[in-house]
Amino acid sequence: MSKAIVFAYHNVGVRCLSVLLAHGVDVLRVVTHTDNPAETIWFDSVAELAARHGIPVIAPEDPNAPAVVAELASLQPDFLFSFYYRLMLKAPLLALPKCGAYNMHGSLLPRYRGRVPVNWAIIHGERQTGATLHQMVEKPDAGGIVAQQAVPILPDDTAFEVFNKVTLAAEMALDGVLPDLLAGRAVAKAQDLAAGSYFGGRRAEDGRIDWTQAAAVVHNLIRAVAPPYPGAFSDTSQGRLRVLRSLHPSGEKGPHGGRPTLFIRNGHLYAECGDGGLLRLLAVELAGSPLAAFSADNQINAIFGTPTLPLS
Image (tube, rainbow, N blue to C red; front, side, top):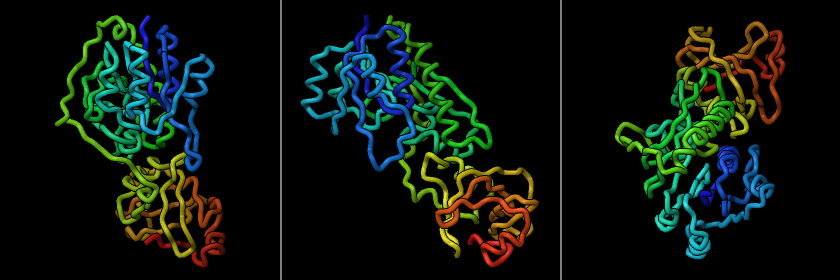
């Protein structure tokens, strides 16, 4: 029976740990994170899954601390796996397993190496992403690939919806390759990093909408940061406008000549963007309160004092 140490968090961590257990891997220790009370915890708990199976769990602030490395080294693992664990693992940890260290990344490497790959893929209008299991080296997301699984990104998918697909893709990729990996038959394919891309993390402020951009660009931002992420927003004369979901009716143009404007048409709420393109806004908050679609212009007039609300 192969022995493993698993660094894991989030839904990908839960599903991939489940795969290891289903294949009879002896998980000696799970290393995870303590949930941050300031963060919206919308995902499943790796610690709870480990507890159900009687697996010891630790959540060190620094997994690379000498005491942590020494504790894990004493377990003499065959494998080390990292499934959406948020901290970088340094050389002393990566050297511990006899049969290698492997990470599951939420993109089709070498594209979208680095942080929050699902969100970045949507922002850039990608129509496909996936999950990649690769060898871990000190350089992030740079080791040889042993398995990949692609999933589609549909034009109105939000990051939450795509992340759910990527979670399943990760489970499928690991489940498919694990027998060969445990038997020492898996072959790693080197990445061509020059053909890929690397992105850093994102902040809530990065969700600020520039309505002078094209409608497609604004739509991609809205869906990339839609809840449970912080959401896209802009500031108006009536308070902060937070846009939680949109549709992009392809080819439709607005009546304001590319002047960014919020308005009502046929009972639906629309935003005209800088290229004259339209977004239909399905879920909106204004000054912290939900803003519903209206059946007539005079209702939006009652709220805004005008039939339209300029967005720039």
